[in-house]
Image 1 (cartoon, rainbow, N blue to C red):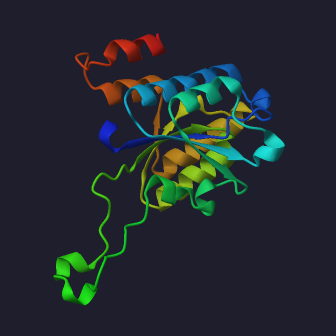
Image 2 (spheres, helix red, strand yellow):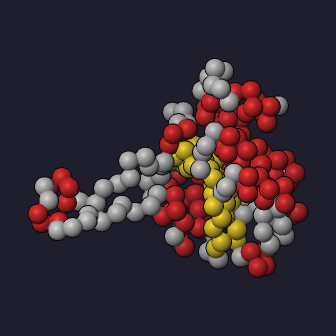
Image 3 (cartoon, rainbow, N blue to C red):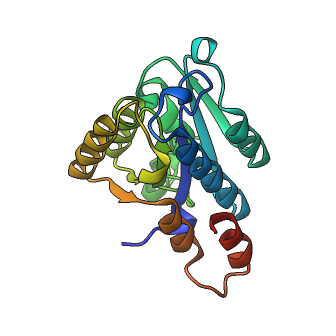
Length: 204
């Protein structure tokens, strides 16, 4: 199964000023998170970012913060490690709107709330710490029956062992493990895509 750009959303978890200096291979992870954000913005994929207890851990690191603003990303502040606990899932897939008017007078097929026609149920997710906030958020999204794609080279923890344990658990739960370049080329699909050169320049 390949990623479908029409069904994708990008979620970046907790790349924060006071957290990132302690992360394994932090510079590489931040660089890939920035690339993902820039590629998503170029290809018009919706972008979301979370921040854990920002009054204590600060906002997103400056390099990523600039890319998020350029991408017009929506920012979700949280206290729970898993963002879905605080309603983040409804940002990604808003609940269906209730039927307007007198439901009894409508035909049966119009009486139930309708799901949005252009639902994006493939969540491309990366972040820190992989074994805490990323893991819990991704597992909650899987429980909500969303397709979860974890971008491994844009994730980290304080130790490599914790990061890899998160990947093992997520794969076992049904998440797809991918890399930044996999995401980019699956969103593009063809070298004839008009944005191919611009995306290729970002990942060279």
